[in-house]
Image (cartoon, rainbow, N blue to C red; front, side, top):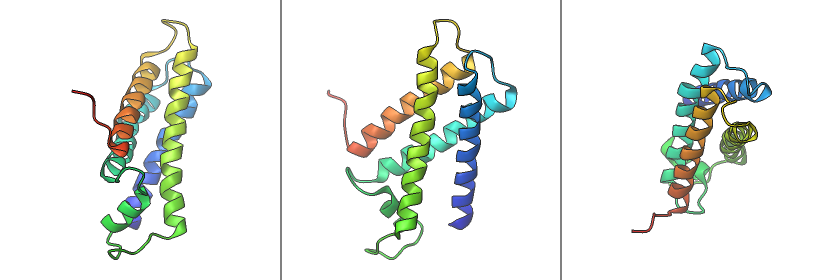
Length: 141
């Protein structure tokens, strides 16, 4: 569990660094490494968040779900540190993606590089999917 947690935190840090790079100069195209981090690493981080929220009952605690998946005793509660770390992970992903989306929205049409547009749209789509999954929402038929 510790190795998986370390890898997921490393991926989140890479994603945040790429987001900060793009948001600081949103009109200039990022280099290939930043583009890769935005698309590939951003997708992995978002998939982790969306998957955990998808298996968490509405208004439930994602840390409790992860705790039981990681081999915690049935019915036992995750510690406050574990809960705080899971919450921080979701919040950092949310704030990073929202900052991408806001940077893209502030620009005039045609000014945003493709990497910024793609990353902002991907984050928004995954955030909506994660929200629908977490809150148990279903589209009307």
